[in-house]
Length: 133
Image 1 (cartoon, rainbow, N blue to C red):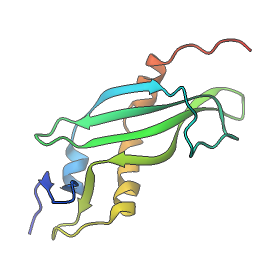
Image 2: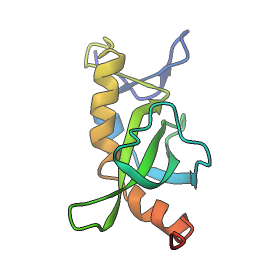
Image 3: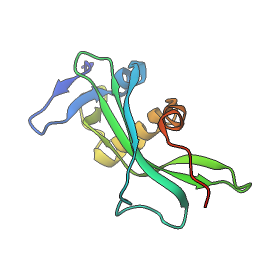
Image 4: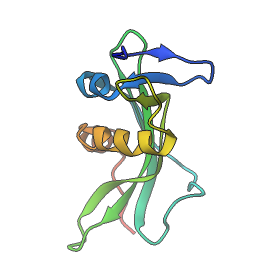
């Protein structure tokens, strides 16, 4: 049985085959700086700002993905963006027989999908400039 994209279940998840996610086109909805440090934040690595980013697919029943990020300093002191904390999504990936991948497995796969999105460019474009200390 081939599973079509966007089967909604009673638990609120959108059941989606991996192939469908990989062929979906995602667009940036919003990114912003979070004025409050998230509970899960790794304070040892983040040096300047925390925030979040939200993206959505252009499918009839949109796939939603969101995550927190932080600004870190690389080895040379250059600022860079990294995902921080768990991904948020309305998707439960399913195999070709319609069986759930499982929540953690779905998140792991979706993280690889968002890593290829140009989210860092979108965030930098919207971020205020750091003020000198």
